[in-house]
Image (cartoon, helix red, strand yellow):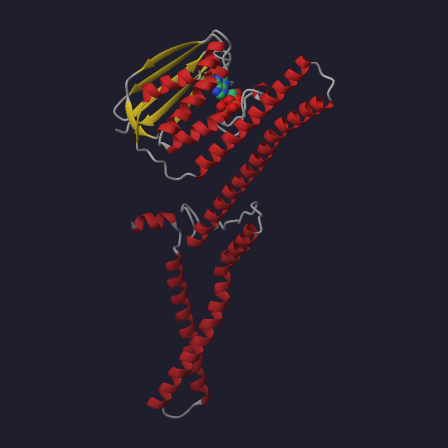
Length: 358
Ligand code: ADP
């Protein structure tokens, strides 16, 4: 334990204080003793009695206190420097400035991780501010995405309803515009629903995992619910599902399959195939959802789980870029993982792993 601490700090503050105090004490004693003794030798010729010795001791003590305090006062100004820098840094953070960074004194660090505890505090402060800055950026980015995503359908609805109110349209044209208004309202409603769902999930710390879910059955149900969409495109489903029961959260898992299978249908052309395989081992259940759709560019693959991210502008009509963020959040909450393998123009495979809790 002691060795570990030594490697971390060049001079721990406790050692530093002990060293400084003893040095100051020794030097002040020496100086005070020297001053008092030489003064007595010069100005006092009488006998050295007990009374005189006591007076000399009292004078030495007084001088030690004065010299020691003065030296400590000057010395502590050096020690307090990083604390003052931290105080100013914290003040700036409370005023909303997340760009501050406190320069660390690297002169005496050598091969050690930190010079002392204050150096570690400074490093942690810099890390905290960096993290806050990232969160602030994400918050602003999220807000601008939300307002952009909301504005577009609202502007479309306003435009179409104005045209309808102006009148003079044939019945067929009226129907067409009403259809567009309906499409945009559904888009807006889906966006609100997904934003609420994501915000709820982001704020949820404890996930109830008391449901016994028959996974193969749940996946089959999801495929049936989405049948209107894939039958319209004349797509084929190939299911290879093991009978598996798992203790988890039924609603959240359902949402995962729903979003992934819906995407597989959305991002595939007509007459394509989708494979769903579900298998298990002692530790985990593995669900693979594979399509032969448009695929994802390798340089965009890293961003697909980001909020509001869509690989292509042409996908705007198909969704709002929140589906995979929701999936990722749920899988993380359930202590699982998700992986994406994809090749542009060939297809995509999502592999979800969840703990095989019984
Ligand atoms: P969206 O609501 O736009 O579908 P998602 O968060 O579900 O948002 O997906 C983010 C983006 O990832 C999509 O816009 C799409 O470009 C891409 N994507 C997701 N799933 C697939 C898939 N199976 N095949 C191809 N691209 C996909």
